[in-house]
Length: 218
Image (tube, rainbow, N blue to C red):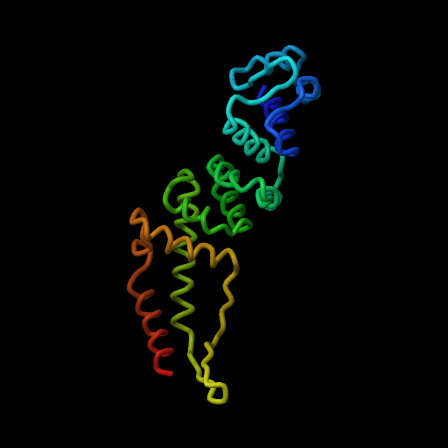
């Protein structure tokens, strides 16, 4: 029965509609692998489903979105494929649902690396997307703040007398994913529910203070 629900939700999502013609819903149910005619009929009687003479819909849009997210997890074989699906404009609300459903930290990490979504990361850091997402994003925050400390410690600021500017060596280009995590760390800290201080020792602040003083000197 769950498979039937997935097929209905996916069909509605593909067309950006909230209902299906009854005949099509029946056809999709009967065509689902491993679903008997009896089970297909039972799906139409499910309390999540609202059926009238001509069409089938879910009783609440949230049911449809949840089942769509669940269907995408089952359908997409890799986190990269799933992230591509979630990046579509009408799937903006599904990423948080999908990540909340994931229990595998490695899969969550691969997924967030492909999404690079600051708002999503902030919610995860605040614990609003489940324990697994919280642990993964905390780990990434710790790792990237540590990396930022190392980069700051190694960076030399050199003036360009001809242009009147300065440049840093060695240069470090941060990826869109890394930038999104850094922004999310700051955003989450403003809520007072999560703070990067618990992950960073005095070396981080000392390294960045030293770098800023070098810049100020030019």
